Image (cartoon, rainbow, N blue to C red; front, side, top):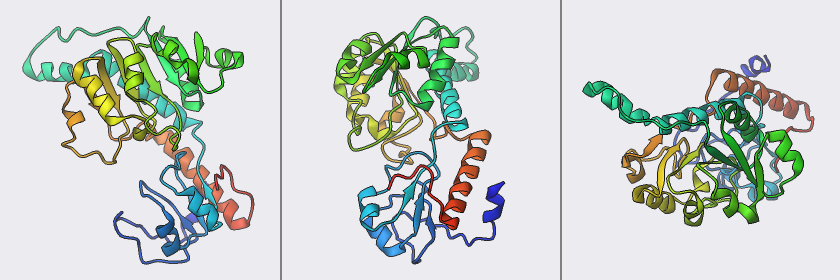
Length: 298
């Protein structure tokens, strides 16, 4: 594996997100849940910023371009997309079957409760049609779920490729949301999508709908989600990503009985990480040789 060829390189680990490390002229800077802004770039002076995931919302791309620092990510396809899709399916089933209550009932010696809800026959809405949505659509359809999509530019080909029962433009989103039992955002995080899932969206959903987010936390308006859950407008939410990570253990949303949370692990599987390491190492080798970088964003 290419990763083996990187073992002779020097590795320094930056652990304190509040203190810029005392190192300069770094060849490759790898953000690991750290914000890489202009100050960090000026202090560290990396020759390349290489993300180990697909999201680059933690990197100030404008500052990188101004300093002519290349920035690259990894594709959100392959085993990563498959792993996220599997985890989303786990979260959906856990919500419908009230898994935390079922586990509590085991400890309390209660049998035959809670009454679960079937997934088959429900309508799931994938907001954003990329690699993860494609993997999800295939799995959901196999379980008898009606799948619809919301995307900026719907085409007949997308309906065919994703096996959708319907596809709506973002301008038509309320029509699709009114049909939705389970809303799953699959869009990338950017300034344009921050707070995309707001109070209007939750109000447009069917009463008693569910919300599952394994994309990015800031896609969602926190207060709007909390109010929809606390009021019962939403039957439940399953969250793998949060507005601040790690989310404080005493965050009020975690205390709601209709919330299930996991610690940003949707893409954390053996096969996904194996592919990530190989793709990361391959791009470092390209950088070392002076070849064009893959998945370059700046």
